[in-house]
Length: 148
Image (cartoon, rainbow, N blue to C red):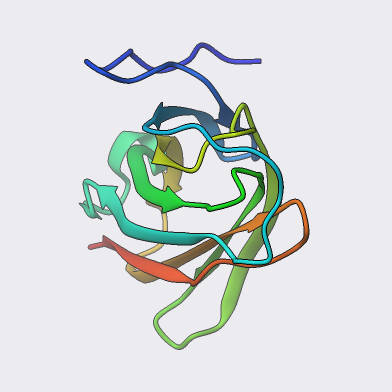
């Protein structure tokens, strides 16, 4: 288990997402909900910051902030899937993991940090989506990370 991110004004500290390259996620919660819904969740505003790094930065692993917002009528988000593609669209990495601490939340912001490989030059596309407890998948969003 990892330490939650800082509590922002008007937000609760709850939830994290655990993947091998993700240290911890914090969840800013906006509303309460309950039960499951046939309506799939939606996500928006996916960003990576910084979105660019110099080749070899931080000994080959630069820490980058990741953030996105969600809406889920059923308040039952259960997992997040993130994939990494190279500039030619070749899949380099894919992982799905649980979203903890989101039960009953119908909207909010999820963010955290992850280590990005800076040992290989190129443009890398990260794609993510979330699913709810019924397996309904959200829309997919992408963000680019450039190593030059």
